[in-house]
Structure formats: structure tokens, C-alpha cells
Amino acid sequence: MQQDVLRLWAEVLRAARKKPAEDRRALEALARRRFREGAVSVKPTEVATIEWMLRLGARQLNAVRESGAGFSVKSVTSPDRAGTG
Image: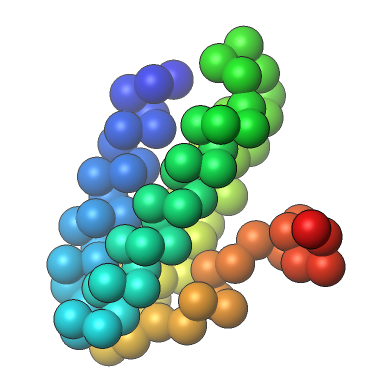
């Protein structure tokens, strides 16, 4: 499971490198924040939650990869976080 998380992190960074500088910085900052939030809010024993987050991250990564030259933070924000807080 830990390797899956690290693999997703590496894929996100690789995808960010293919974006223009401004988008790259925004994507890296968003990814950093999301991964840190997950590390703090989810216990390592919560396997189902981690698996769900990995699937969500993979979908969001695909959205970023398919977004052409740039990307929109809105296109990769989690719908479950909208309106909460």
C-alpha cells in the first residue's frame, strides 16, 4: 500500500513536469497539500480509505494528464470536499 502511495506521488510529479511553469507550481502545491492532508487525517490501518484516496488520486491525475497545456485546480478538486470546512 505504501508503495502505491509513493508511486502515485511520483506520477503526479512527472505529470507536473510536463506542464508550463505556472501550472507546474500550482499542481505541485496542490499535490503536496493533498498528500499531507491524507497523511495527517488517515491512519495507516484505514486500508479502505487509503484505497479510495488512491483511486481518487488516479482519476484526478488522469484529468490533469488529459487537460492539454494547462490545468484547472477546479478540475482536480475533490467533490467530497466541496462545501465542507
